[in-house]
Length: 354
Image 1 (cartoon, rainbow, N blue to C red):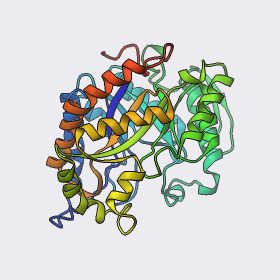
Image 2: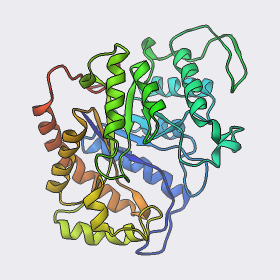
Image 3: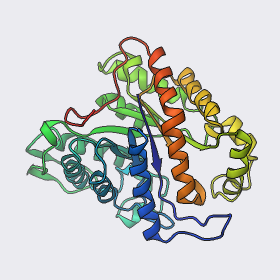
């Protein structure tokens, strides 16, 4: 099983000081987070993709290539890559290039994003989101597996005997996760191709996506890729940890209360009780994360969001330290001890260091 962290790259004022980092500071902080994640033994770092303020990760492969040069083992991924508004030809080229630069230490999560205003900026219609996602991925999947592609679709110009370069490292395409929180069509797309399915369950009630994950598992088996238990599932989460739970609640409260997502709604205690948001001690984080397996079955990747709502870099690095040294080693041991026979390891390129 793989454990890691992800960022959406927001530039948000720290509510305790009123100061927002500059874009330059935030980009450098994201790099520092990834380096710290490898230092403490985490497996994965993932970045979002956004093209609107107040976010900075508009070019994930540039950011991840920079991180690849400063790490040795860390898997570099996305959360998510916009399959709807990016040209699939450019995705094929960019992520194959990153795959070579990182010696196989890369995969990607595809999604539609949550900002409809982005679509017209790239000449797309948000009402066509699902058909765009399906058609663009079919082309991307083909480009990585066939050297000469002749293709025609609804949403981009046709291709005649086109070869995407560079070719995937050692002929093995980057592993793809499909991220979704509500669309059965995306779960079906992942199942049809035998790809991974990622449910980023950070805001909804715990277990809310169980039915969607179960549908993906059933369809994965239906399409002949293995048993439902062998389907490749990933989950999101969010943490703020301190040695004592009361200190964690006290430390996170100003960020929660001023959050654009959480602020003005149910209390921190209510949200932490009802959703995968984990605020408390390392032992509490271990107990709560282990409960995810009881709901969703054996799964392969757990990513935690640790830099929400203006948390300063020092606090974020502390979260990564606690996860890597006190939480994840226990989770690895416990998850491995109860994993059912036949459940495969988490996906990793054959060339990537172990």
